[in-house]
Length: 143
Ligand SMILES: CC(C)(COP(=O)(O)OP(=O)(O)OC[C@H]1O[C@@H](n2cnc3c(N)ncnc32)[C@H](O)[C@@H]1OP(=O)(O)O)[C@@H](O)C(=O)NCCC(=O)NCCS
Image (cartoon, rainbow, N blue to C red; front, side, top):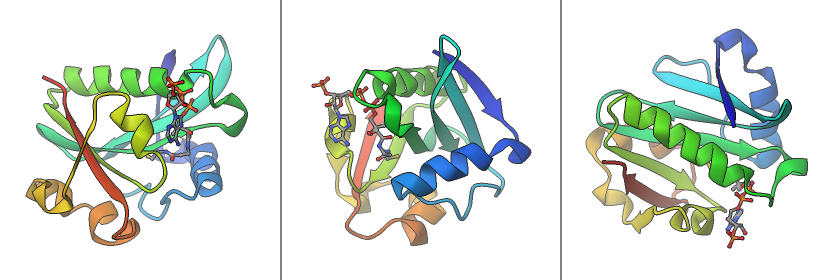
């Protein structure tokens, strides 16, 4: 899986994929976010991002392109983002999801009550405004 960092000028295809998947796009260009595209053997398969700084960060905007789903790309993209995060010194990743909680629990994420999220994670736009209160909160310790 080849991972490419995206600049703010390159976010169009990510925005389209997130819109199609019903995921938030309003804050993509704000500071403190890093987004990546992924391709496998020259074929674009999806995107993912990390938000925040320090040991606790938000995993966000993980999306596999519709024609590429169900073949392990999601697992491979997630593994690549987690490896990047470890190299950055991240100790725990956090996320909210409406529809893919079982995908993440299959990869070692644990569902928790939203009130247990660290303050820096609760303060993100996804937690405060962009994701519905019904979204499932999960986290995974990387180290
Ligand atoms: C969630 C998503 C990234 C999974 O990508 P994918 O390439 O289809 O996933 P994989 O093929 O790697 O699937 C791995 C496993 O997760 C399961 N899985 C995939 N999507 C799932 C979902 N939405 N809910 C529950 N389980 C799911 C698969 O059945 C598979 O299980 P198996 O190993 O028992 O066969 C993809 O469906 C997607 O882009 N969804 C829309 C965006 C989204 O919801 N993102 C997550 C919030 S940030």
